[in-house]
Structures are given as C-alpha cells and as structure tokens.
Image (tube, rainbow, N blue to C red; front, side, top):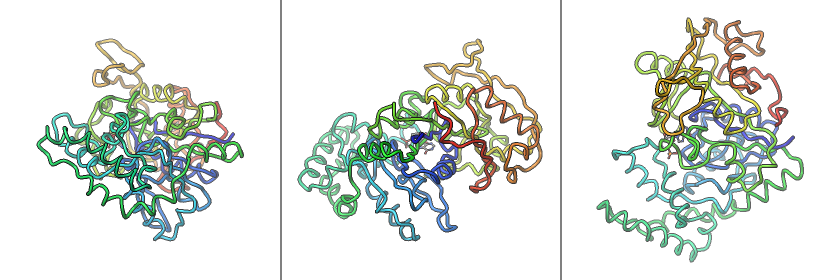
Length: 427
Ligand code: IMP
C-alpha cells in the first residue's frame, strides 16, 4: 500500500499539518494537488514557528520529496519567498521540490481583484490571495501557466491575453486596467528561480508509485469548501475533496489506496457561509480562546461550534474515507456535557443528510454526551483517556462508520494517540 490522500473533513484548519507531518515521516513523496497560497500550515523548524502557504507540510522531512501539482494556483513570489525562508533556516528545499509547469500562476492584479470583491456586497470572505480569479481565468482559458513564464515571448503573449480579458471588467468597475509591463516586471526577477523547479508532476508521481514508494497527497482547505460539494457559493475555487488528488496531480483513481480524513473534535470555519452548529457569543469565544482558533493565513478569528456528524458522514461519503484522525480532543476538557449535532431539522423534518441547496436551512438537532475535566495532553493510548473522552471518540467512530486511526491531544507531534498505521487502512 503506497498512496494515501489526506484531506480536511470539515471547513479546513482541521490540523492536517500535524497529521500529514506524522504520516509523511514514512513518505517518500508529499504532493499538493489543489488550492494555492490560501492554505496555511504552521510548522516548527529548528524550534521556530514558520507558516507555509504553498509548500506542503511534508517539506519538514529532509528526505521527503515535495511535488506541487497541476491543480494548484501558484503565486510565484510567495513560492520563492517560502523556499528562501526555509532555506534561510537551514532546510534544503530546491533539490527535492518539483512544481508542475501546468499549474497556473497568480499575478498581482488577480489578487487585487479578489480583495476588491471581498469588500463588495456579495463577499465570500476569501483569503484575498487571488485564488478565485486565478481559477476562473483558468476555466475561461485565459490563464497563465508557470510553464508559459519561462519563455519571454510566451509570457508576454499569455499575459497580454489575460489582461485583454480584464480590460472590460476594469472599465466597468471604473478601475485602472492592469498593465502588461507591470505584470512582466513582477515575474522577471522570479523566472530564473522558478524555471529549474518546473517539470511534469504526473510523470514524477507515476514513477514513484511504480517504484512502490510511499506517496502522501496532501489536501488543502476542507471538504465543505469544495467548489462542487461544499457550501456553494461560500467555498474555495478548487476541488478539495479526495478526488481532486487525481485530477490535480494527473494520476488515475485506481492508484489511490487510502483516504485519511481529518476532523477536529469540534468544528471551526473562517470566512462567511452557513455553519449549523456555530456557537455565537461567550460560548464561541471560550472555544476559540481554548483552541487558539485564529487563521494561519489571515489571522482572522475562526468561527467555532460543536461537532456536526451529518457533515462528517457527508465528508466520509464524498471523499470515500478509509480512516479518520480526530484532532484537538484536549480542547474539550472542562465541559460538563458536550452537545453533538447528530441530525438536522430541515423544513420541520429530521434528516441525517445535508440539504442540496443551502445548509443555512439545516437546524442542528443535538444529543448531549458526558464531558470530562482532566487535561488530555499526556495520553498516549485510549486507556489513558478518561472514560467520557473514550466514549466521545467511539461515538464518532460508530456514527460516522469510519475507523479512527489517530487522536491528537496537543500541538506537539508526541501528543498523539496512534491507533493504527495510516497506510494500513486501505479501501
Ligand atoms: P479563497 O480560497 O481565498 O477563495 O477563500 C474562499 C473561502 O475558503 C473563504 O471562506 C476562506 O476563508 C476559505 N479558506 C480558504 N483557504 C482556507 C484554509 O486553508 N483554511 C480555512 N479556510 C480557508
């Protein structure tokens, strides 16, 4: 068994970084397949905190090769800055990084239009990193790929075509038109550094799989932010679900052996959009403070609420989860009882399924489970947990019908209860 996809089973920020980091210890290759600099991984390098947005968490392991797939949108400046930052801290990155030439480049005016839309009446609350515009330009077939940037004539032609598409929009908005010369000046100092990193991600991953190397596909964001299966329009612009690993890398679904979903023991969301179990006011504030729930990319406070089992079952379905990791169980210590959303009431009818049109119509139906007082961070086996915490974990496992392979009880790598080898939960 060699190929495992690791995805967020909620709205992102489930703690994928730590789990991928643990799984990647035994991986030869870590592949990112979607999204761009909207993601944020908080990593520790030689005891110092570093946040990466494009490079996968696996970059921390010096022997692991990293691949950025064709499904990603890449701000070339952010990529070069991240590499320089990690290399400045003594971690060699370039020799073990391959970036798909097919990935699309995010240029400054695409990020600017994303930020401008955030201020408008139909704001999604995006990260402002140009993700939506870059993906929509790609779908409209006017995008600029990284491989286009390496030849000056191709770069000029591709940027001219993209900017032509922007001119009517800029005129309609009364905004200045983006400038071809400015865009070329932006990429010019970056091209020499980007060019040696470019290659064929599909071929690289295919060769690794044929050689029976262990490959981890690292999802970004979370299931409910998926463009097709999330809470549209309050979603990101890529396929965050496990299927995105195939399209975003260029390998077939028959190559994937396992899909590992990560869920918090509760729920968070950043940005706008429906969130049935959201806690507003003091209850939400105390969960946010206990869990230090602030966005790694934007620093925004995350909205917090109780775990949502219909949404988790949905994630199990749309991703084909073979195992689950539950993170931040320690944050729930101290509650007398813990409400768990087990169903929704939609139009007066109880259901365990998400409405297709708008999750805002789903009113949560809660069951209460006994809480526990003890801190959990020293637990290394299920038996080290108080009975109520054990009960909480087995309740999730039974109701979502997916085996739990890991429980995280603290931010440190060691603060983890490992119940099985992530690579062994095969389909
Ligand atoms: P965009 O991906 O920047 O276009 O933002 C679209 C939505 O996805 C917004 O609600 C963002 O807050 C959310 N989002 C994007 N990336 C992440 C992430 O890595 N974690 C959590 N939410 C994210």
